[in-house]
Image (cartoon, rainbow, N blue to C red; front, side, top):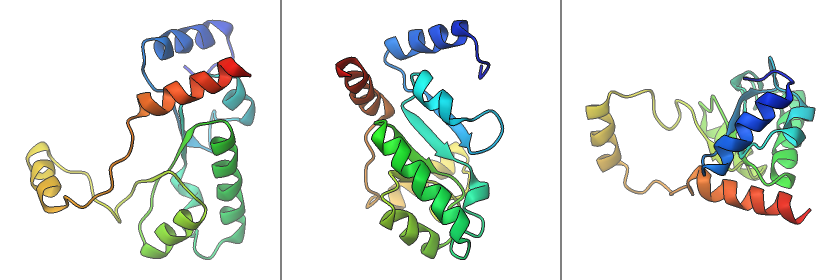
Length: 145
């Protein structure tokens, strides 16, 4: 879906108009680009895990991650960082005001039955607003511009 055609933009806007959120996965690699962030009706960007692998020690990765978080925030998008595996990574991302973090630090992939048990054991997890709520905010910001 990530070609440069007007048709793609129209299809994605139709999906957004249904109230669905749209995410650009693996931002910073492959087909992701800064120009697409301004053209496509996205509600979320997910920073690729390759920037997080040695995040604690790699100041270049920290700089790129900080910039992407800032851009996403200014565009009214939820910013998700993939691949968080250490407490130090989590703390650094929290200091950078990353909206959502995912990775093995929090949980490994689970079967449905195991997920139910995991949720019961971790009731203190902070709730995150659903993407549609964030999407409405982004949509409203773009309309007022």
